[in-house]
Length: 382
Image (cartoon, rainbow, N blue to C red; front, top):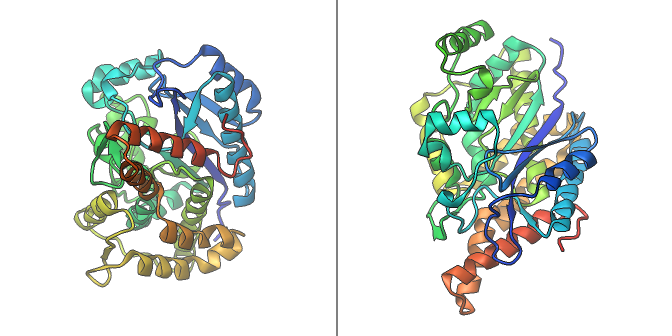
């Protein structure tokens, strides 16, 4: 069995904030996107649903080293272009206190149609995510691996949480983003399909019925990309810290290679019910790495550090083969220091302890996000 390329592509969505109010901007200058596009070379920068959002996509990367260079370049470039326009950038899946009802939408036919069809469910999408594409050329293999891979999606979400706040309130969830995203159709865990042909038949029914123009309007937590020969993982919050993002991109590639190895040996990961997988997905949203997930093989909740050690054992061979051992072992750092959600909550609590009002503490969290988004990029925040 020929080994897939396991190339990497990383897409991230960011929020643009005003450095004085720390709130989301209402409208981004037209020159900002133009300058970003002019400077990004063979990488991608594009608008998103909201005018306060901007999306990037790396070039195709052969390994995590190339992905590191590509993503750091993109973050640095956008941070610096934003600073030239007296704006700041944050990589977080929600803004600590922005109000969705005050946001303005990008003038683009796709976004207008989305807003018209989904109404307030679409207008509340003041959220950002990270998508990791892994190159798997074979159509049938992509579907087979997707069916098995769903087991690991809650683990990845728990390690990426960056959306504990909504409207200046502590939601009690480490990833509030998915409660917003799940309100629109064709989201959540992916369906299971017997073959690539089975997948295509289902998509064709929806296209022929006029429900969607193509498969890019399927927004599952993982999906076969509608544009590239990749499996696209979409469940994760956008990571504020660059090293966390690279770690999780490496883990995604390693898990998929591990599942490919099992297939090569005529083995496979057990497929569990959506009921059980969704319970772990909820626990990841609610607790992040704090309270553990259900080990579905053992049938009981296991502490998250133990799950991480078991995962590291599973993918050790693959991390070595894909030359990303250091990035994968950064999981220990995430467990020790927390996700972005943990760090935001600590920054807010420290500000309150020092006498700040809730509104002032929210601005402190934004300042924390601005600084951490730039860490490791070589960018000057301004």
